[in-house]
Length: 322
Image (spheres, rainbow, N blue to C red):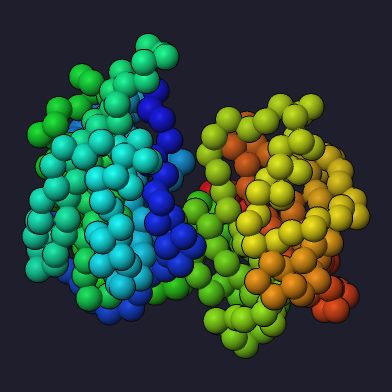
């Protein structure tokens, strides 16, 4: 079993991840397999298929994965300059080779190496490949890894460097590619899709919001082993507390319940937005399934909360997992 994808020191860029506008194409794009909603396509080996857990591919028998994240175009230079051997080693990636590569007409930087074996466990070293692709309208961050004997170096390198790009998808196309459907927007509208499995909604005229001028609601699906019934309250509280943009949580109510054959957990809390010190109200609803869960996080200024929490709930209740 593989460890989770490499945690990057420049991970704050992931918060800005969005699909930039403008057509970008690459040779062989028509033959590539694209993760849902992604502009980056690949030619995976026969034993790797699209993942339901993240935007990318994984080996059916386990032991190899490839994930892709889309970032703004200016992220290329920042990533390349920040990916020093020392920085990457601090993140558990020992670089053996770095090389400039061409991805169609676009520049790229490929890092090859491994996550060293842990001397305190029997886990072997893991081979890793990181590719940063810089195109005029988007940056691609590709992270691939494989256990010994799962895939050959040649196979993984070919898959990584064979990436192709297609024109930017419309927001409607990205929303349609999500693993769930929202039947009732309740006055909200989508403004951004992230990682192919989550969507940011807002209520109001602005797409770019400052100081929480408008209510926001994020829906995200996770495909992984869900917590057991007796662990759900602690799991939900920990998920809420992990939000790094909010502080001083005061929980108004927290409850697990079952509705229409589905297990849910809901928390409503007051908090403070860290960047602005604006008091807010947070609504977190988690819908559990045998193979994962759907998490909804809504945030609204405390002076605007009237009626908004009910609208958050209308949206969440209408979600249909595909």
